[in-house]
Image (tube, rainbow, N blue to C red; front, side, top):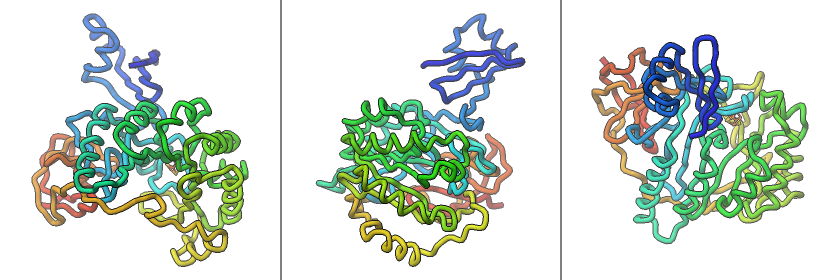
Amino acid sequence: MQYKKYEEREEIVFIIDDVIEVRIEKNIYKSYRKKYDDKEIISFCPYKKILNKITKRRLYYITKEIPLIGHNAFGIIDRGTNLIQVRPCTGCNLNCIFCSVDEGKSKTRVTDYIIDIDYLINKFEEIADFKRKYCKNVAIEAHIDGQGEPFIYPYIEKLIKRLHNIADIVSVQTNGTLLSKDLIKKLENYLDRINLSINSLDDGKAKFLAGENTYNLKHVIEIAKEIASSQIDLLIAPVWLPGYNDDDIKKIVEFGKKIGAGKKWKAFGIQKYIKHKFGRKPKGIKAMNFKTFYRKLQEIGKELKLYPKDFGIVKCKSLPKKFRVGEKLRLKIEMFGRLNNEMLAIARGRIIQIINTNKKIGDIVNAKILRNKHNIYVAEEIT
Ligand code: SF4
């Protein structure tokens, strides 16, 4: 564990691995310090606050007591194919004006999660083994993504290297801002593809869309070139925001072709902007319907429409579901949820999100399962 320590007026603050911020009141720290060293205090003192240093939200460090299946913001998601989504943490260093999960400086997200790397790897291996039993001769892909920027995960390099030993393909989504040429070199023999989001090649507009004045387009362009000239495949993935970056999409495609994106897979993954209930909506935006979106994509290039087969994605038996929609349960609230008025419970080895609740940690609730698609469980309280 690497940490920095400093004092504030009333608290001692530890910053662990550049992301985890642990705060302990000075008088509590002093009494613990008589018996324990700093590492012991960080690990075992129950009177501490843990925050994500980047987002300043409450942070849970997820260890084996908490299931990794059941939530869509962290853990592992199996959508019944040979691609397994790995979500090591939440939180983002940008605040994109269109972000579907309202990441960065958020009005709606109140909790972050970060998963212990050994636990995450063990679980991934277990799921990859399960998949291999049912899908013979199919490449298993570990796709690192999340509700946030995966490269804020402090153990991302280790995670990619260890996933490489288990999965046949390892890919990651990123906004590119936290990558460096050095890191790309280190990952070259372990990572197969980087899906890089670039939404404009105009510096001012790119900053505006990223919702962050420090966004450095020049750096991201350099990173794109570096990836394209490495062993790692580059897929450029802009979000098409009608009225905002219509002219940029063509330029991004020209840029990607020029630098050699898509050596092995498709070079572009242009995404249609979709309004999400708890996502950000750029002022005045009118989302395209799919018909218009695909027509406009065709006008730029025939190869831009994507199909699962472009990435070798095939159906593969899903992990067993543990709850039926409509099933009634008695659950204990264990943790804060990602949104206000959302709390988390644990049952049958799954996380369950209980929405629209005012209950507190430790409370027992009667709940009904509303959703179980892909083993992501949402429930509501019932009387
Ligand atoms: S980089 Fe991605 S996760 Fe981060 S704010 Fe932008 S869209 Fe959201």
